[in-house]
Image 1 (cartoon, rainbow, N blue to C red):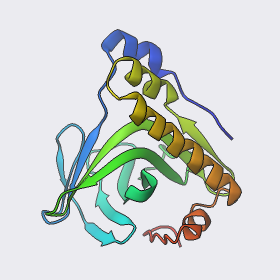
Image 2 (image 1 turned 180 degrees about the horizontal axis):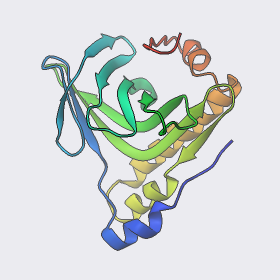
Image 3 (image 1 turned 45 degrees about the vertical axis):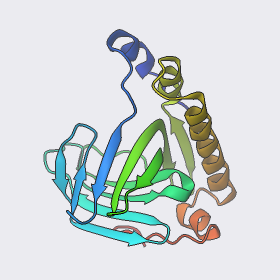
Image 4 (image 1 turned 120 degrees about the horizontal axis):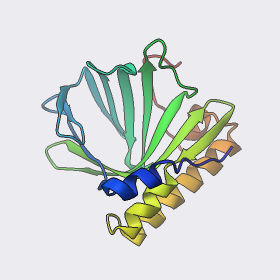
Length: 186
């Protein structure tokens, strides 16, 4: 299933579109700095050939209590599993952010969120959301046409690949030689 959430368009016109969200993953320090500059302790980092794994609690969040993420630079994706609190569950198994990923020689990873997100329900479907935000960011000069093109190509190729693998994240990634491990998913 392909859908798009553009409900933020009217709101962003009133308050101005936000620039791309940037996040820092400092493996040596064991911290994760969110887009608002809040530094959080990370329970586990693991650097693999395919990318970086992070697991940490999310204190103070009403919606979810724990977060696991994989940064996969070769795919332009951050794949996350949110452990939702009772009453805040969502119909999703994985959340895929389309991102740019860079690393520094001292092992600090950085992501730039390119607005597009994919909500995956294993073996059932995938929704693409926030296309309107990406287009508005291009219009407002916050991302280049080249970055937007790369984001759209990443989203389209990911949706197609997941569809060819029965919307099974593990099967698709295995076809690419990538095996991710998760605390909650076998």
